[in-house]
Amino acid sequence: EMKVKLAEGIKLLTLTNVAFIVIPCNVVHKYYAFMQNLTKIPVLNIVDITISNLTNRSLHSIVALIATNPTIESNLYQNRINSEKISFFHNNELQDKVIILLTELKVFKLSNAAIALWGELINYLELQCCTHAVIACTDISICINLRETNIQFIDSNDLLAKATIQRYLELKK
Figure 1 (cartoon, rainbow, N blue to C red):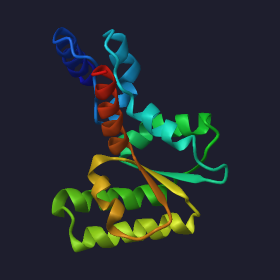
Figure 2: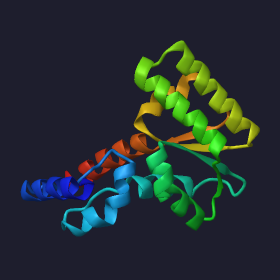
Figure 3: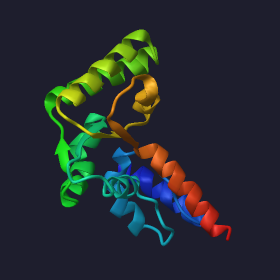
Figure 4: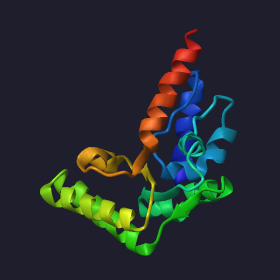
C-alpha cells in the first residue's frame, strides 16, 4: 500500500518536471531506492544528509538516535552510523522514553509534562555519555532548546530543509 502511494506521488512529481524531490519523513526513506528508481529527478535523502553531518564529529563521540519505532525498526540510521564507524547508543529504555514523550507531545503538545519528559530523556542520554543525538522525528524537534545540555542535537528535518534551500540556490546560479 505504501509503495503504491509513493509511486503515485513520484509519478506526479516527475510529470510536473520538478528540479528535485524532498520527502520530510524519516521512515519513508526506507523506500528511498524504490522511489529514486522510479524517476530521473534527484530525491534528496534525509538519512544521507543527516549522517554526512555526523561524519565531521570527534572520534570520541557517542551518538544517540531519537526516533519513532518504525524509524528505529527500519535500521536506516543505525546501518549508516555503523558503516561510518561512529559510536552509537540506543536501547529499549531510551526508546520507551522517546515513545512516552512522543505520546505526550501528540496529545498535549508542549505541556509541562512534555517538558519534564524531555528533561528526563536528556538526563538519561547524559548518563550514557552521549555527546550527540540525531533527532529523526519532526514532533520532537520543538524540544531541542528547552533545556541546557552539552549534547549536540542533529535535527534531520532541519538539515533537510537547509539542503533543500542550498539545492534551490545552486539551481538559480
